[in-house]
Image (cartoon, rainbow, N blue to C red):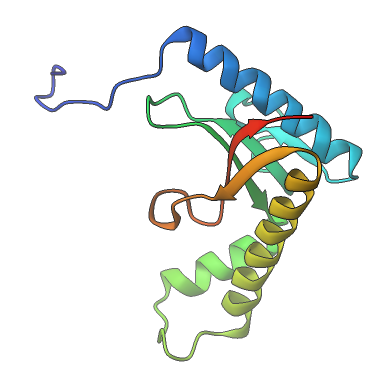
Length: 140
């Protein structure tokens, strides 16, 4: 229990986090070799939120290594602003449809590239991680 009266999900032990970190680094190298702009989002710094593939280690016990595509700020902002203003889900504006298509296509591309490089990957849970790719392992 925390001081606020609710349980936080358990974190993975240090050895598991070290394995995930190594897996994340391998995924970054594979994507960079394929010509994909890539950065570690969980390490912060100047690359946070930049376009390209963002690789993160989720520290929770049920977490893992995730790869998500970031679009240029202009496309992201256009979609977010439209959603914030309220839209009819049965008739989405072009900017939102395009944003969703880009993320879907790039998720599929990331799945294919990482699989070809020797990674075991799958689509991450959409409710929790959106259009991210879950990297489960690597066998060169």
